[in-house]
Image (cartoon, rainbow, N blue to C red; front, side, top):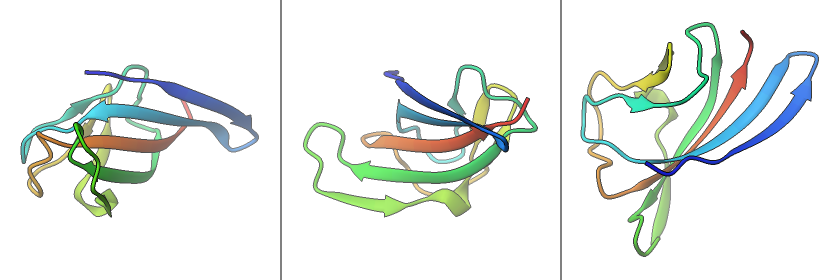
Length: 90
């Protein structure tokens, strides 16, 4: 998994952007430093990671858990790259 974070501190927590490899449907995405109280802003899926052809908003398929984004079902993102925007509140 490739991950890169860009941080911006504000009064409402620290905004973070993480790039991560997509996972299969119903498979969590590990995110270092993510806490269960953090807020998910957006998940954009770039199809496919090797040669990006399109982007899709997948935010509604995920929720925040400690150390990971959880996806109880949804799209198989195994060949895709995810851009995860989240607010670190912990």
